Image (tube, one colour):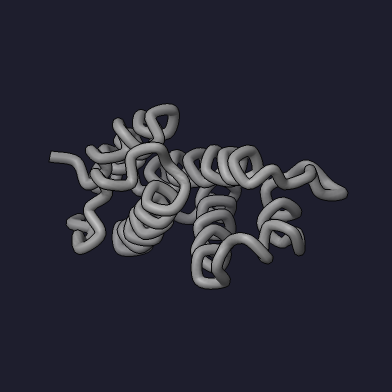
Length: 137
C-alpha cells in the first residue's frame, strides 16, 4: 500500500505524481526525486490558488516558495522542506552523479510531510489525512 493513498481523496490531481515518485524509490532514485519535485510544483500552485496569493515577480518555483506573501501563509518548516526537495531534485536531474537511495528516501519523507500538512490544512477532505503516520520507505 502506498504512503500517499490518502492523496487520492485530499489532493487528487497530485496523487499520480506522489505514487509515481514513490514507485521509483528503490529502482530509480533520480526519477523518484524528479517526480517529487513535480509534486512540489503542484502543491505550490495549489497553495497559491487556495490562499489567493498574487504571482511573485518571477513565475518559477524558487521565487514562489521564497515570496514574502507565500512565507507569511505557509509555516517556515514547510517552506524549508519545499526548498530542500526543489534543490535536491534539481541536482538529481542536472548532475551526472548517481543519486543515492537514502537521499531519494529523505526527499520522499519530506514530500510525505508536506503533503500531509497541505492535505490537512488546505484540502476538502482533512478527515482522511493520516496525521500520526510516518513515511514508510
